[in-house]
Amino acid sequence: MPLMRAMAARLKRAGRRTRYRLRKQIFVPVFGQIKRARGLRQFLMRGLDQVRGEWAMICAAHNRLKLAQVGR
Image 1 (spheres, rainbow, N blue to C red):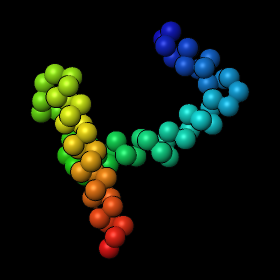
Image 2: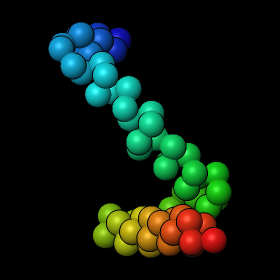
Image 3: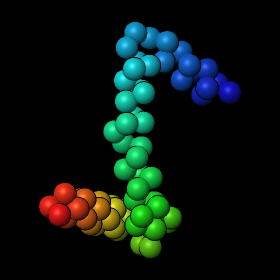
Image 4: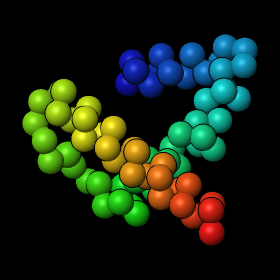
């Protein structure tokens, strides 16, 4: 519960709530698309460096597929 109170206090500050709402429009849908359309539920590699590399490849593939759809 202390974390929830801290977040509530943080959102009460001026301009924070509107910025936090933007996450729904900008960042969160991308993660949902990657999870659903690309089937990423867990990483296949172990170790932070390897996971970072795997994530970079997944993001690159996602972006290339998005660009390919725009070009149609």
